[in-house]
Length: 327
Image 1 (cartoon, rainbow, N blue to C red):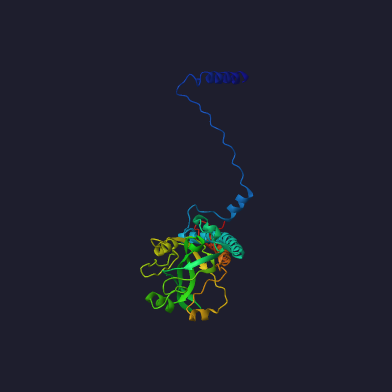
Image 2: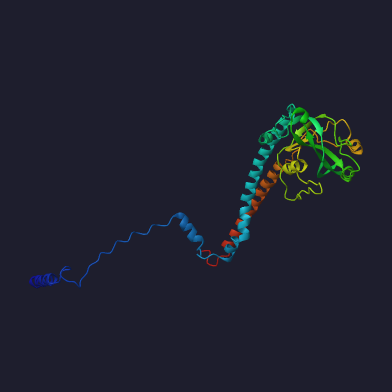
């Protein structure tokens, strides 16, 4: 019995030795299979999500509605309005600094306008009070239209000769005249204030204010000037100086507004046909603080609307997904 078992074992070993080796046979190949790493166990958050929902990879109609162009524009409104509010705050700071500079210039003592004026330096002396000595000359220019005490009219601008002091001729805005007075001057039935019948005038000393800019420029809705009709709708100082210049008299593009002394009532001056000068103060419209509050309020309100839109549309999108089901 033992001998038969041993002989069977020997035969099995001989058969195993007779098998071809992997290197000796081209038909026999052996490839090692990589060991697969064990799958990591899901986290508690993943388990919680799997227990609740099984999401679909395709967006639903509600999700597509959430990103419509109109909704995207609504989402951008809070950022745009906030930026506009910041811009208005910067404009407010600039306007306050400008008002302070103007007020400081107004409070300074009036200076005597030099005979030779440096045109490039004029912007630095904006709203400065100046003293002038000379004579008014023709022809007049009419700039406007303007309204004073509810009465329509125009501002009369005259060349002002400073030849007695060795200075150049400049433009001086004498002030407001009623339409009836302006029409009479244009028709030749009346003379400009301060001009005699022979076209001459007496030498005067007056106090004025330099214009804020050398050339203001025309506004978007302001019509073009009409030199042929002597109607100047905006302060084109260069063209105005050229229009009143003559061969023997060159007018410099310097513009000065005569200041009203406030001694006579305005209605009395208009009835007498006297020009009304500008007040010695400057009123600058400053609404930037109001605009900033409006823009910031719109930013906050539209931001709240955007949050509400995202939350409601997001919830409706989750509920409308066809493959999202409760497990």
